Amino acid sequence: MSVQKPKSINVLRHSIDLYNDNMVEKFVRKIAERIEIGTSVTRKTLQELTSALEQYRMEELEREKEANQTPIEELSATEEQAAIKFLRSKGLLSKTNELIGKSGVIGEETNRLLMYLIFTSRKTNNPLHCISLGSSGVGKTHLQSKVAELIPDEDKIEITVLSANAFYYFNRTELRNKLILIEDLDGAESVLYPLRELQSKKRITKTVVHKDRKGTTKTIHLTVEGPVSVAGCTTQESVYEDNSNRSFLLYIDESEEQDQKIMDYQRLLSAGKRNQKEEFESARFLRSVQRSLNVVSVRNPYAEYLTLPVSVFKPRRTNAHYLQFIEAITFYCQWQRPKKYDKETGEQYIETTIDDIEQANEIIKEVLLRKSDRITGAARNHLERLKAYLKSNEQTTFTNAEIRKQLNIKESTLRGYHKQLQEEGYIKRVNPPAGRAGKKKTKSYCFEVIDMKEYDWLKASIDNALKGCLQQIELGLVAN
Image (cartoon, rainbow, N blue to C red; front, side):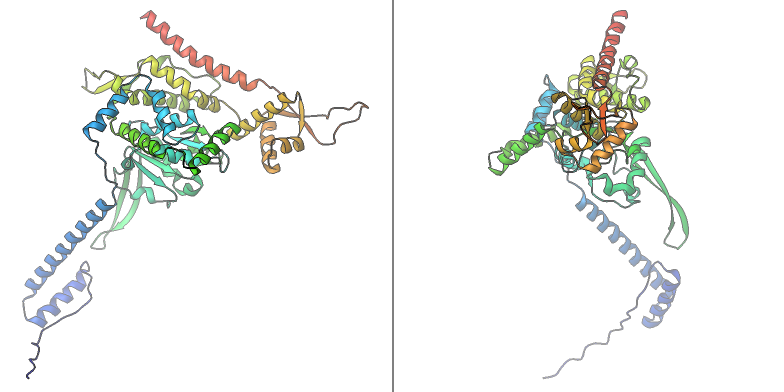
């Protein structure tokens, strides 16, 4: 049996950088010499190969990008009709809040509706932002994640940890009208500055040095455009003051009543008695509602009558937030508003109603109250618990040891609260009360709350200011 010898094949194997001109020229000459063809033919063939590889690489990147993109769910005609019918119904905000509760958000009736409307504002030109505040383990992240489930996946980006420059490498319009969710601000400290710029200026730009294919150094600008709506959670209110000033501060309900609601829910869930299908359907329906909201401009004809109390902290920024929140409610109620057109520009818009302002005032009252407070939310919560304890026991003075035991607070935490309350003039140190024999009952320092009704006065001033705005509107309408 004869064995056929393989034909001689002229093979050239060589490592090469097709973007290195000197290396390519040497390779061209070597190929031309080995297979005895002209250098021009070899050079042209390598150029065609390079172009084909570039095209293949671009197509692969596009396929990878499309694979990583969140698919946009299209509403069926029936789903869209149901969502629009809901958006046109009376008592829309109350019905929405009820559905949020059915979707699995327990308690937090005001915070959950406020957060939902803030997340809805991502679709407007002036989105709102929020920071959830509270002690560790009270459910800040849970509330944010549950309300975020009501927003379509394609409209949100969830972040745990990001590098300092990560935001600059998004595509130019990739973040436009998106909801950015930060699980814990402590894990995203490096990106807080570009986030603040996105919130304020609605775009960020970074200048970097870049080498092109020929090795030439060039300066390029990386620009990412907003607007965006940003939400985050933290236990440290004072640490993130710059971000807090740009955001609504939502203080988590840490009351015993809220604890009981959550524990009851957990027990029902464990026993299999919670209707999870209803939760899923409610969340899905609210996502359909979000998809049925169209981009439309909002104008508030009553804005000139809306003034905030003088006690509000940083009134310029808070006033802007107040007006934007009213616009967010109008935007959400867009299917109940007639479309109008600007005579000069032809722009389509809807107008705010007095009902929108009344609903905004009711929801935002607690936020304005906190914005008017001189102490942090955690210190305020402690002070109000302290007042309730003193009132129930008909006391006027107290000691740190007594409060630590009765209110179950760690010594270091209590010391921090009382230091802040003393510095701001809410409590003062006093002499211990004397016993029957004229001796002091305790050798410990005693403290006294300076004004038991100061928070009630502050609430009344906020309430009166908001009512005064509505009265001014009514007077203005009568005058016109």
